[in-house]
Image (tube, rainbow, N blue to C red; front, side):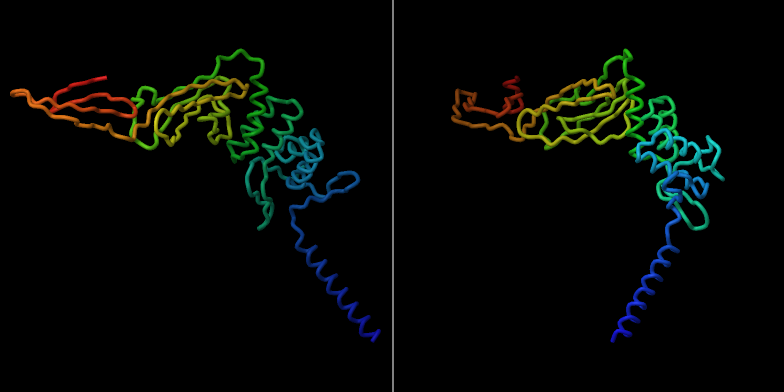
Length: 284
């Protein structure tokens, strides 16, 4: 019994060891290799520097992370072959890929955190030209806001294209459209307090939204906010009238060759025009 148990244990241990070896052989190449004590790399490919840079940025070693990102981009010596383009999948060798390679973006973030604002904007704009990402847009907004801070700039403006239209409507919804502008770059456009989706602040931000209406007066407020936190709002009012006028004929009397019609006409939003036999009898 003991011998059988011992053999079984040895067999299981052997199978486990084989599994570990198999896993090690399939280990992703994207795992950078370095001395955990000194941080020194064992290999010097651009992806090794990139992985270490990301880890250093996570560990708040921002200056060291920036140096590694610069090595990836060929701005510093070290990598055997630099790779200067941001991309979602970067080929390393053969059929191997590194998912999410953004050295320009991450270098820009490092520069922003280190107070190197002009370099941050340059790196982040390069990243967006090569491969847009929400992370790059977020930090570019922050860097541009810092760049604009303290400047004397004209306030933002909002235009509503539908202001010239009649306020009266019998439709169930209406489109509000226009444009917000600011030298401080428009970050948000809100319609009745609800922000429209946007990621990157721009000098001119056109907007368009379908607004559901309720009976009676509907006030729509469009608000714009720029990177400096300055806000401006403009409103337009629409009157949704879904019920037709009510006409009541109370009495018809003949007066010689003339017929007199007596009655009452009402409307919940007010009468505009009343005609009888094509002749206008009332106008508001």
